[in-house]
Image (cartoon, rainbow, N blue to C red; front, top):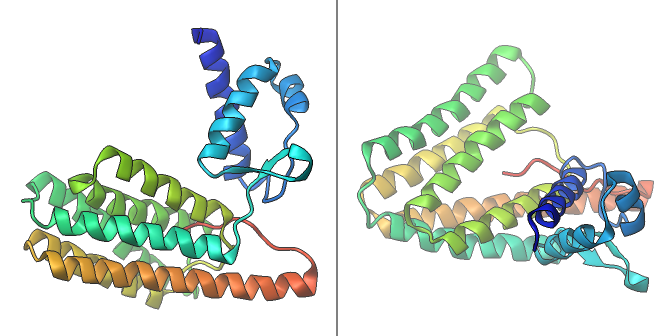
Length: 246
């Protein structure tokens, strides 16, 4: 592929993914290669290649009449994604516990914990019941950083890519919910701290059990959120389609 074609494909990929990430294109939105071609002033070939890649990663799916549309995850899809996360991350954390974490690695992991703990203090000081949107973004950064850095200790490149895509799909296509409460944050921080302590001490079985429970609790909360919004959809005729993930 020529560099120009490759650059156009990457631009189309980022443009389409950006529309999905922002929530501007929700689940079920149909894509038009012709409209995108005119809008981006590029040929349809790189757009078609970008669409094929996004479909392979789970962001798009084929709708009736052979058109491509933004994916809509069902309750079973979300459960499957959490099951995949648990299978890979629990295996990887057990492997990580067999290694000796460097001081720099430990410092970064503890830094993510401190960032999340600081949010509890901010929330207590604000007098609000839950994190606002900006604070939830700060939490997501700390939470994702903690989990990803743990994976980097032991997981191979393919595992990392798969878990990253899985978490992204959950974040985009799951159900919108309110920001975490102080109690929820404290519980998550305790879980993260216990997981890190077990890994640092080389207690692999304990680390695996703790992380498995942590992911299962998160998945259960997401299922409850899905059920809540499904009931709302029946009443209101619309279903929000994206959320900040834990």
